[in-house]
Amino acid sequence: MTEITNVTFCGHDLVVIPGETPETTYVALKPIVEAIGLQWHAQRKRIHRNEAINEGASMMDLPSAGGMQRAMCLPLTRLNFWLATIEANRVRPEIRDTILAYQRECADALFAHFFGDAFAETEAPVARSAPAWPTDVDMQLRMVREARLTFGPPSAREVWRECDL
Image (cartoon, rainbow, N blue to C red; front, side):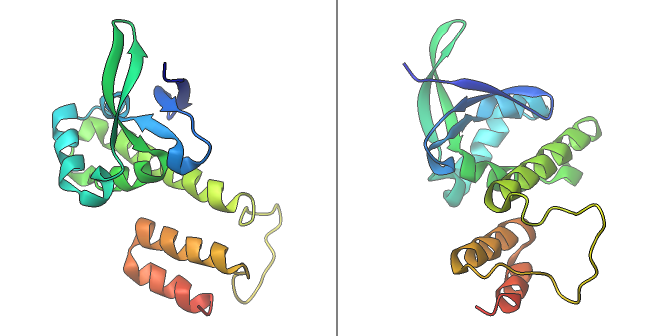
């Protein structure tokens, strides 16, 4: 039997299948889609159309009130990418704020996972001429990747240059 955990995210209970790493931790998509207020059928088609997201999708047997059910799940590392494909300005006004909250919270949680408190604001901000970029090349490459996924290629190029890669 698949071990599942319920996680409260943006005020909704989501189904998570814990793994050893973010890549092996899966999130059931239908509960998220329904919590946001989107149509499951349309989002399933969106996922299948996007090769980068679809290649991470997996059908898993999850326990439910009616017994075991097949459910489409995404690795935690792909969740933010899927959320970013939803254009908040193209959905019903009554769910726009929920979508934006999910997108922002997920992006912040992913950033915090990789960078922790390294970039947290201090109580009294210190004036400095340039941001303190990490010196670890792996961390710099993660920052470039996250900038590309979150803000697009121009931001990734800027981070790449700032890190002297």
